[in-house]
Structure formats: C-alpha cells, structure tokens
Length: 214
Image 1: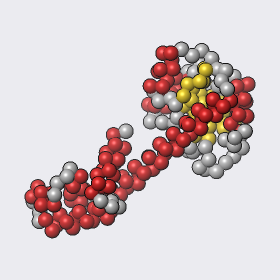
Image 2: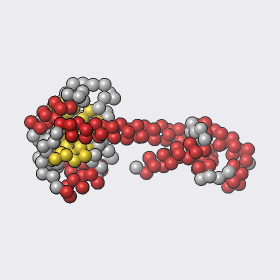
Image 3: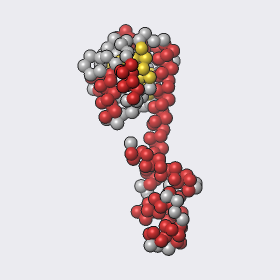
Image 4: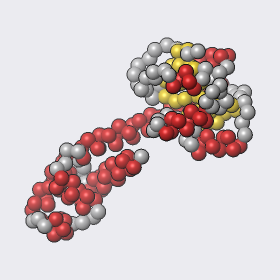
C-alpha cells in the first residue's frame, strides 16, 4: 500500500521507498521525515510502476527481495527505460554476487538489514546529490543542444572544423570559401553557442557529443 508524507516544493527531494514489510516502510518514512525529506512508499514494484511519480530530484530506496518482480529486476527495467534515478538497495539476505550486480548496474549503495538510521540517511543524501548532479548535467546538455540547433548548416560545418583545431585558412580551403566568409561564420557560431573561446567551444562540442551517445 502506498504511503506519502507531507508535500514540498517542486525542487525539494522525493525519496521513493519500496519494501513489502510495512513496518520497515513506516520506519524509513519516519527516519527521512525527521530530517525534512518527503517520501512516498510502496509494497511492491508493481505498485510503484502503476503510480504517477513527480519529476523531482530524489532516489529510490529499494528492497532486493519483493513479491513479484525483485528489486534487481526493477533496476534492470528502469535502466532499460533510460531512467537513471539513483538506487539505494537494502536486504536482509545480502551476498557478494548480488551486491556486485547491483553496484555494476548503477546502484549508489547496498545496505544490509538491520542498518543504523545514520547509514540510511547518509546513503540517501549521497544518492539525492547524485541525482541533482545528473539532472543539472542533463539540463546543461539540453541547453547546449538547443543552442547548436540554431546554427545554420554552414555554421555547423565550420564549428566541426574549428573544434578539430583547423585554422581559418584551412577551413576556407576545405569548404571552398573565402577566409573572410569563414571568419563571419565563426563569429556567428561563437555568439550563438555562447562560447567565450575556442577551448570553451571544444568543451561544449564534447558535451553535446557525450549527451548524444547516452
């Protein structure tokens, strides 16, 4: 059964708890609420997947053994959907292969029950900060992609050659245009990309490329 604590602002973290033991769910809700963190709790992965979850920074506190699909199954499903929400796993039946599998698939922590309250708080705080960082990076990449979309085809060609380290005269020769034309395109693309230097432009181009590959 789902349980949700007090409402909060859109940017405040939301921790999603999934455990089939109601006592553990309630305990985790109380622990996190004691430090002002809003939670929503479920008894199974099926309940979670059928719910509407707000798009906010946070993490998933997930039991490994659950009725139906396991916590590891849910992690694999979320990864397949491109959902990179950080996961803090918890279990009373930990083994090395299980924990290694979870961590390799992107889990931020793997806690064995019973754990201390502070252990859980530390794990959740680290996971939330990781999610904030991922979201910030994604937003920055989306902004850069938007800037790149404003370039004309010729400006995009010039940018690709600039980041390769070619000089204006080399770019002009390769594109079959005058060096003055290259300078005009270069100035326009630097302005549109909000690049302060060639180094800055190269870094932005690499970030766009990396985001496109994920």
